[in-house]
Length: 111
Image (cartoon, rainbow, N blue to C red; front, side):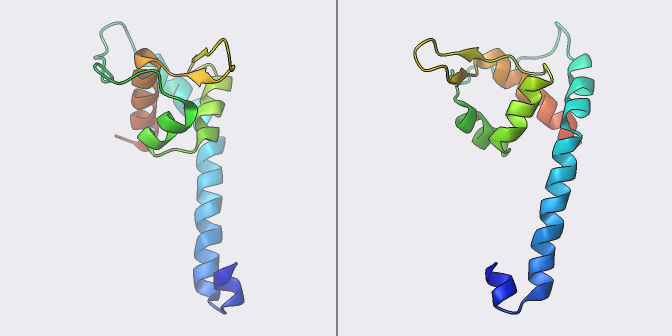
């Protein structure tokens, strides 16, 4: 809004374009994650070995550079299955969950 009210239309439109790109990427997340997880097997290296666990959803999202909503989408798609804290109901991402999220993110990001 600062760009719009400041008369910087080009800058404002860049923000809108970036927002649309993120929305399009998030709409494709379930299919992408499904494809990434189909490549995971028993022999997959544990990239999260030694990772501090459990992570909260916000911590894991920051770790991956994602929005927490993306992790929720991946959970709804069955890609992630975090445990829940019995007292609070909050998601707890253990080392295996972190590994799966890291691998899915790498596939999704094209690494």
